Length: 627
Image (tube, rainbow, N blue to C red; front, top):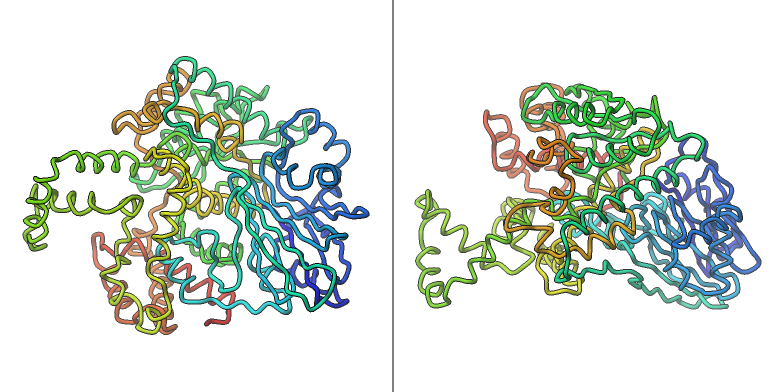
C-alpha cells in the first residue's frame, strides 16, 4: 500500500514544500511512516515510508520507490539491502538508464527525477500491485499513487466527467489507464512514463508511455504433466518464501499470516506458509450465518489439514453499516467490489496477531479458474457448425419473440446470439448497461457526453495485447489487467490499508507468472474443466473436497441484507434517491431499481445496487467538481 507523490513543472515556482505537503494529504499515512521529501522549485518528490532508504537524492538522480521490490539477481539484491533500495536504483540508473527496470521484480511504484536533463521517469510493477496516477499541467507532469494526491496539485483542475462515471458503471471499478477524473490517468501494469521539460520555463514538455514488460505466453508449448507439476510446487514454495522475506524481518517470521477462504489459492498459500514456518501458520477466515455464502467448513478443513492456527469472524449486517464511511474514504475512486468488506474485517482480525498477510489472489488469472473461460470454449463450438446451417438458422432464431424464447428454443436463441459476438465482447454481460438499454438508464445529457464503445474497446485492446492467437491466453491477459490489477488487488490493498497491515501476493511472484505462461493451454483448461493443471498438481497436497469445490471467494450477502436489514435498506434508498438528482442516472430508472429491490426474490437490477451506493457515497465524501 504505497504512498508517493511529486511533480516536474517548469512553472512550479518556489513553494515546493507547501505543494508536497498539500499533495501528501491525499495519501494515507500508516503507523510508523513519515514523509521523506526533496524539492528544487521545478520538481518535487515525496514518499511515505518506514525506512529511510525509500528516497535518495544524489548529485543527478532523485529516486523514490514503494512496495516490496527485489532485484532479479540475488547478488544485486544483497547489495540493495546494504546500500538502500532507492540508492541502489540510482546507482544502476547512472550505469544503465531505464534498462535497469528490467532487473527489478516484485511490487513497486518508482519515480526517478533526472536533475541534469530535467526529466521524469515513472513505472509500476509488472502486475500492477502498486499504482501510479499522473496528470499533465501546461509545462510539466504531476504524479502520485492516488488520484487524491494528484488532484491536490494547485495548477491541476480535475473534474469528474461523464465518461469516467460510465466507465465505472460498466466495470464497477475504474480500469486503467483512465480514472473517474478527466485530466488524471493511471499507468497500466508493466508500463512506464517519461516526461521532459527541458532547460527553460514556458516550454511545453512531452509525455510518452511505454510498455516495458509483457507476459511471455507460450500456450502451444510442449509440457509433461509430471515435470510441470513438480516445477509448480517448487515455484509456489519459493514464492511464499520470497513474500515472507520481502515483508517481514528474517528474525520475526512469526509475524506473518494468511487470508483463508477455503478455496484453492488461499488454501495453497496457507499450506506452503505452514511448511515454511516452524510453528502453526496463522490463518484468518470470514464466515456468515447464511449458508450460501459461508465457506467456513472448507476453511476449517484446510486448517485441520495443514495444522493452522485458525481464527474466524462472523460478519453481520451492522458491520457493513459501521464500516461504510471508512471504505469510501480509503478508495481514491468509486469502488464497487463488495467483498472488500469481508476482506477488511479479515485483515483487522489478523492485525491483532501479525504484521504481514499473504493473499491468494491471482491463481485464477494464471491457471484458468474463471467460469467465463469454460463458457467461451462452449461458445466457440458454434463456429464449427456448417456456415449454411448458421445462415439459415440464425434469422429464424432471431425472430422468435422474447416471451416465447423459453426452454430449449430460448437457450438456442441466446447461444446463437452470444456466440456471434466478437471476442472479447462476448465474455462480458453488461446486463442493464447493454447498448440497447442505455437510454432507459442514463439521462440525455449524460448520454450526449459519453463514448459508449470505450469500455468495449479497452477490453479488446487488452485481449489483443497478449500477442498470441490462443483464445485462453488472450483471456488470461485481459483478466490480469482488469479483473486482477484494477479490481481484486485494489480490493485487498484497500482492505489491508484500512487494517494498517502489510500484504503480499505469492501467487503473483514474477517467476511464478513466467512459469504459468509457459504451461500449455490444453493443460490449464481441459475441455471445460477449470484449473485442470493446478488441481492435478495439487492432488495429495490439498484435501479432495477443496480441489472439487465450487469457486466462491470473499463474497457477502449484500443484496439479502439490504432487503432484510432496515439500516442497510435505508442507506440504499437514500443513496439511490440522491444519485437520481445528479443528472447522471435517470431518476425514474433509479426509482425502479429501488422498487424492484424492495420486493422478495431476486431482481435483475439487484447486482448494481451496491455499485450505486458506493458511487453516491464517494461523491458525497469527495465533493468533486463535475464536468
